[in-house]
Length: 65
Image (cartoon, rainbow, N blue to C red; front, side, top):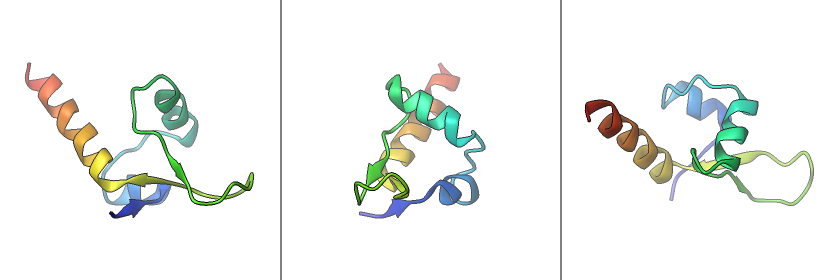
């Protein structure tokens, strides 16, 4: 499983939303939830590349419909 950082979401996947927007969408179930590898308050968030790819594919299908 490949994990993506917030910067990877921007650079590799073209997702330009802010961190706040991404977390709001994830809280509503409209974006994949982040993975925390540590429980500390400053530990970084990661996202599953497979989940991000599936989310992007679903967005493309919605646009085509």
